Length: 290
Image (cartoon, rainbow, N blue to C red; front, side, top):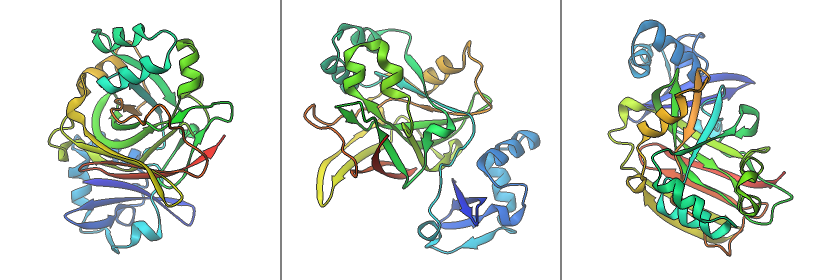
């Protein structure tokens, strides 16, 4: 099942897509307005999120096929934090080495037992589908990073989403200690368009991923890959994130990227970014300067 966060008249509504139909779960019970509400109901009843949603389908309103176009979804998870993992794909390790004045350290991360896991964004720094993602005005080299996002509730995997870990390669390349400034800023992250329940994903380590970047009528980047190229497992990254860490009830962990534009490329204001993940969906954002 896919879960979308809608907003109607300023009020949040939770929708679920299953068997080719879209249902308004909030119409079935006003106590379910967000995906977080569904997670709490799942915990209280000791049932999966899909089982809770399935029981409400008969009372839920069936939405039109154009509902997601007429009322575009917002970020599917609005509470907690977003964290990210780095250097989980070979191409990411190569890209970090190319930008850095201290390249050897990235090879150490790629081959080390301990993964790189770092804080990425708060809800106020995170945007949803069709919103503007940011590039810093003081950065000269900026790229999107398409990633599989793991949605966690009380440290347990409950679903997956699409994530964009925006990055200033020029700032990070000056010195690895500048990583927070290169990664954490206004509109530095986008997630969406939905949460796909973990029970409905056969294998998160075998999903096609693609990204296109357009400027006006020109497509500047169009490549694809697969999450099976990730050197770390989802479970390994989650374990590193939650162990010895006070994690919020609901959080998202981005798992790294294996799609990196050429070194000559940098984002500009107005560029359009589309990131797709098999079985989950496509996340679209426009670039703005912050």
